[in-house]
Image (cartoon, rainbow, N blue to C red; front, side, top):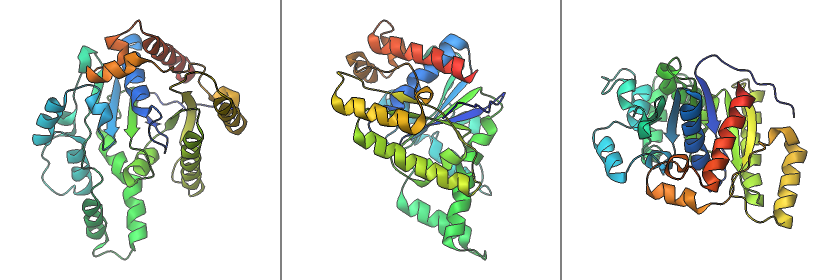
Length: 296
């Protein structure tokens, strides 16, 4: 596979996605975004689509998030307003955004919410949109997939250079809608078989979207994370990724296992800010440089 990036001048939306959990999606997202804003002066928005709100809690304490949730200043409010546009708007989209987080100019966060995937909310949404229309649930579901996250992101496209989406693991409606709203995607992956299975599920879903002309999303690359001692298994998995995607699709920068990354989570700040001289932080700095050269 050769890289042919269809760049946009503003508001490029990038999914940081793998259908397998525990592969470092959030850690890559928050540290890459921080490096791009800090070192390259890009305006970057992180959108937390994960019900575990890990990206949100990478930048603020649970108490701060609880306050935002009580005030309804989370992504759930924007999704509700997108689903029911005729209702009175509680907040303007810009009022939800946490600006210049960690005092990094241009680094903004759209806080997530732990209630995004409540089944009864999705069922009610499908029912309401089907009533009075000559279409079935399948058609309604597809329409919601196609437009939901696009509508949420539309007010921000001209305000940012990059919008990075962080997801829950698994093939959920909001994950699919986020992919459909994206121009590009990056796959964080561990060198283990289950991680490759997650990539396979993701690639199958994206292939399905492309065959039905629902997206033109492009793969920017695969980031290998949590690397430790090389084993026969890890070598075989890496060889399989190279065979399936080509060597140039793998980012040269690999993210090692590093305790400083875990300590940064406790401090609610990315490791590139808490321990910039650590092995993990230096790897993310290199990844930021490689991404910038690859994309720009």
